[in-house]
Image 1 (cartoon, rainbow, N blue to C red):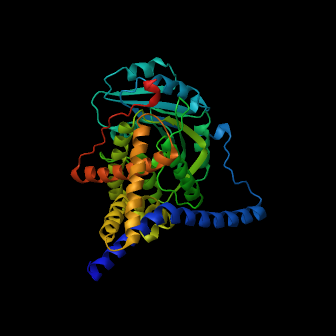
Image 2: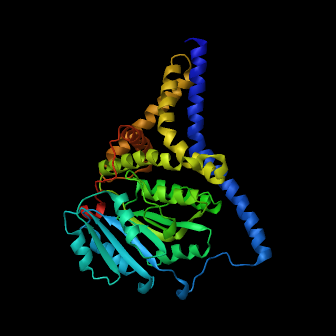
Image 3: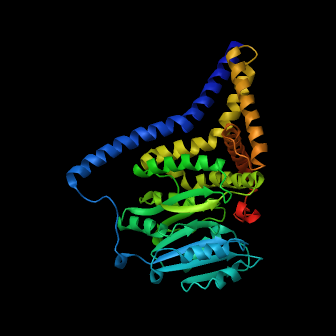
Length: 404
């Protein structure tokens, strides 16, 4: 191989590997280091100031809250969702529940009304328009000072809304998001749960540094007057809403005590389709939030580049690194070994795919499968974004409990 070509290939390989190593290993390490230093400084300040760092609101101070969610053909879960709404520990006189039924062809709206919650209003939209359009309509009809968003298949702990709302006693806070915990009724571990625990860890540290990127659609709250209508293609609405609020100069915070529960998808195929959809939404959201990548955005630019953009570029880096190693393997044994390891990793992922399709979880195989499938979904999502093949009108994902 020509020396100059080999040099270019080596530079390409190590650049791709460096990007992967940075986003998955170096960035979390830097985040721990910076957040730990920040916490020490905060603790020292607290030791001298002796002021309370926990937000508290008396019942008389609680704001009026609008709890909103969109539903499309959710008759299998809507009764449970409405029961969950009735169990929320927030004064009913200060809480309205808005259910947006988006072109439902089943009994979702009927069952939601049948729940009989006095503070619930079912808004039935005959023509299906997609989740962003439904949320725009619900936000326009809401009366609360605080909007709390959730999903039809997500169930909140009773105190979740109280935990989210307390943060708005700080006028600098514009958005507060909770923690999503994935579960399986059968008690089996979820490989996706490993990913969510990693994401939760990053959110916790980013929130401490006022650099939180996005929110968690399962449970997040905003000041109503900061909401701006979502674009028709706003597939990842939670990310867009939170980042737009951050762009207005308000803080986004993460509260691990505001817990929401969701059940994993019933099949690997359905879960993969959901990831492709989210992947397309990621690239679309970049069009509306790119200003937060500029240096004047502060630490949020650091976390946006490191946590999101580098992660979205990771699939391309994986392909580039493998092809570069493959091209160099004929002349250099080191790259032959790297290419062989990559093939072996893909083999473990394939076994993981077969096991996951049978609801069998083995970390040795499931972790490689989840990692590669997540990145492959991002590639397909990027292709869907380029050709406009992904719309905001979603196809609902069946959950495990529906198959039992």
